Image (tube, rainbow, N blue to C red):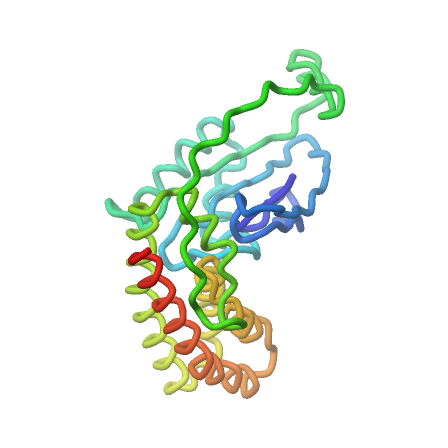
Length: 265
């Protein structure tokens, strides 16, 4: 198992839910991306839950466990056949995100089976080293890289440039426009939480905010938001949150300058 930019895989068993710590880059198609991979064996009755981070507009983030509501939807159907579980949970996801979701979503459930069932299953997969080498694939035409005109040290544009090349200029323009609109709103909501002294509310907000900021290159602010998420002391969490409002707008302005320059290129 390897993971890039999504919630951690979760093993759901009779004893509860446990994250499988398999991390990867925020964007899975960056050049020279490095992944951490793990192997595990499911016991009979265990289910492995894999989900993208587009399940809920308020949970667009990377890393961490799957949302509690999603784990609950799966575990309350523990006695149902796997296909029935997937169908039921899919309907609940669709109801939750509404008719106009901000992102696509994927749900995969894998179930451990008994030894008797394994005898009727597919043969074991060959390890990658034993597989035939695939035929070379012609690389798609590359979109011209946008100029990295943002000040050095403010942004990490490698992943953003890779995203632009992957989806094309027009697709990237739509994504970036939505990102800038949502980020402006999120900074306002962040300031409201600080003004209210809501240190607890900052935790869940920081998780989502950090993931989105990191995906669009605001690496410094994303790292600060992660510190807010994991800081146990409420007073220190609020102090770090104020620092986000100092550093964040600077990086955000640099990103918009880069975006404008790339549109003119």
